[in-house]
Length: 191
Image 1 (cartoon, helix red, strand yellow):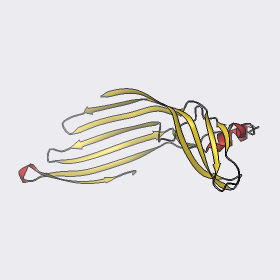
Image 2: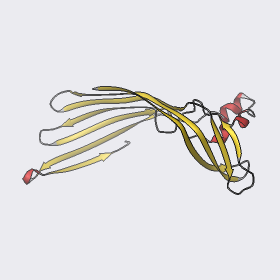
Image 3: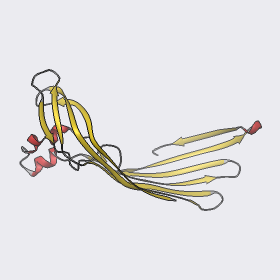
Image 4: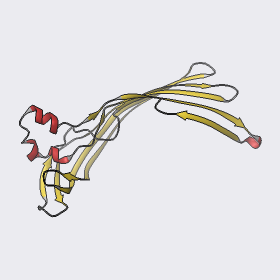
């Protein structure tokens, strides 16, 4: 088994976001500077041999990946309809869209002495966030969100639903002459 804690901090980065601005009816490039991010969490795994044929493996992580500060942003309009605009993008504690921040799996593996194997794995994932649109977090726009409904609709990052998947594989190893082997396997994911 193993347990690992981690923390990585990224400082003073630059990000470029390109999107269609409905209000101004044009594509924009929104550059962010002074971007600070924090990645921290705990990972754990344990493999237990239940008997000579079965092994149980459990693994998981609980993490938090987020922006740590507000950043300076510059919006450049692609059609030149307006001059570049500077505004603060209020990103403190907005989650990073890097995949699930909570995940786990439990696997049961069977290996027969005649070189057959079967694996069954149940996976869990949650705390997966969509990337944000920087214009929704502009300091000037946040001042316009006057009701709780507006704040909830416009200034809240969308979180995807968590879920489970079940994966299975079966296979056979055949040993050939000269210490070579041939491995046949069939797997199905997300049963």
